[in-house]
Image (cartoon, rainbow, N blue to C red; front, side, top):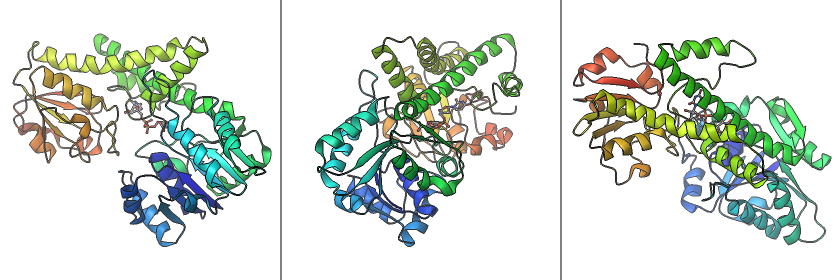
Length: 415
Ligand code: UGA
């Protein structure tokens, strides 16, 4: 099939790459010319394991191309995906301006029957709104159906998750449009769930919020374990053996970050309050999530008896999680800011993030290696669980430090 994709962020780019890999002809559209030029050379603007190879292979095979031209992206398309960002607005609600613009662009530039698939994470009712915008602005007589198909990929595992996902959710009001979207994914052999558009939109938010709640739950349990001398990893293992609970997303740590859980939990709270519905469980999870980072910083401060001025603190890991260069809502940002504000001297190292605009103006040194990072340090903070840190020879690493105390923010080190 011929596919157009609006937006080359994580979701659009990975979707486009995978659809081309399974044989569809894909044109990805973005307004950022520099990004498009980089992509046409087969280079991904984001760090995502396996993505560069798929891009290069499918560009070479003429199944994948990138453009800034709306006409080019839509001309042959049987299906157009909307995969633009839905950033958090000031009140917590998702900002839908990019989605609305995409809907207008489709309506104005498409002259043939097409199916529009909304892949971006959008508040319940947005697919209806997109269809309304398209129908109000399109050439009369065309048939344009809108289908919801939320994305469940994780950064750092995006390719794998797209090929081997647990489910594909298709929310449609028209059965012909639904079947056509289903046939697009057929060869992936992933279970497909049919529902209406509003339920599909809700499945995405409810799933992300549930996982956020699960993480906040285990984080609070970990605080209690620490107070009582229990081992949270053993507790999570024991809980996880119960199939009704499951072990996934029971890794206690520094709270969830990234571009999805923080934004989507807030958006869901907004949706609930707009509709007069109590969603206090999610609200509590959000609060617990932000407290978790302060609890960690406080532990470091307590170790130094309340005074960190002039203390050399090594931060291992900046990205919000391993296998990504994404710094959005990364715990490292708050931890570094808080310690710098209290007079600590920070040295930071990440295997992929070499410098970050999220830390612009903050006094810190970026180390080139983990050894350089911990050199002469009084404390080592393991903030992101990169395998480079898990597999390190810690006895040797510690010899570079000033007899540092280690704060394992991810409960991952074995000593
Ligand atoms: C998440 C979801 O897992 C995806 O299914 C979804 O498609 C995506 O959001 C999205 O909405 O686009 P992602 O944010 O890439 O994916 O990352 P996760 O691997 O889910 O991790 C999210 C956060 O939770 C990270 O900060 C991670 O460190 C934290 N986490 C995860 C824990 O603290 N403990 C865990 O056990 C698992």
